[in-house]
Length: 252
Image 1 (cartoon, rainbow, N blue to C red):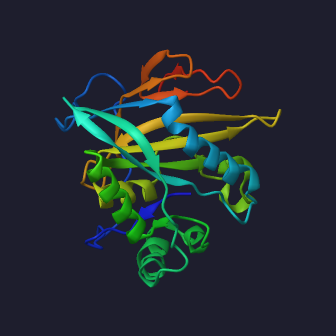
Image 2 (image 1 turned 120 degrees about the vertical axis):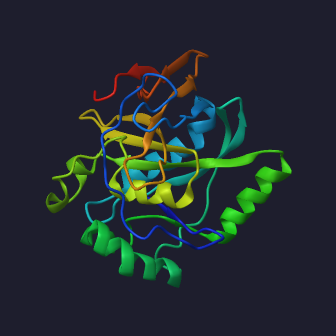
Image 3 (image 1 turned 135 degrees about the vertical axis):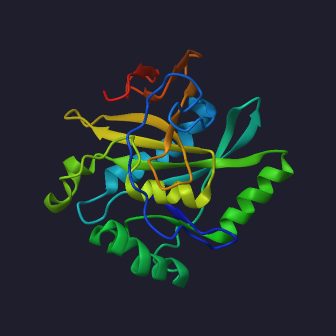
């Protein structure tokens, strides 16, 4: 479910993140640390390829084969606002790259738990795909802004031994490790919650790494819905039927 990327430098933080509670959506400054918060702007249509791929993974998963979906965000930043233009997919080499296998065995499993020994847990983006995406963005005058990945309601559909930790659109300790590793300013988490009528309710949140091992900083989302409506919030829920974004208060 969580994601780790291979990078050109191939370096990773020495230890896991230590979670700390965020301040919520007030303005663009973290009052505790004085850090400037980015703002993310994205259209519903831009997210559709990711949402479709994530839904396919979610509906085909089993308790022993968790769903995984990851994409790179490409766009540009103007006056502190990161505008996402498209999402790009890369191959997952989590189980085939010797570097990835060693990283999970030597660092990730000891730090974050035995669940990550499952090769379906985690995503390691092929460095060749990451290079292709980066070069394609540069050719179009754009930048790699960050990533988006899926969080399923694993506390509901996962194996009983893994249901104690409630998953949401908030980052896990492993996510913090990822965000600190890449240092990308924009990191979207898309949480899927299944309903009894077989519908899926996606909830989105954006996060920015602090770089010190503490919980990533929530950053405001500006989302343009299918009908053209603009919704702003730290957390945004997309109803499965109407296709309209609605604002959700932090913690709901």
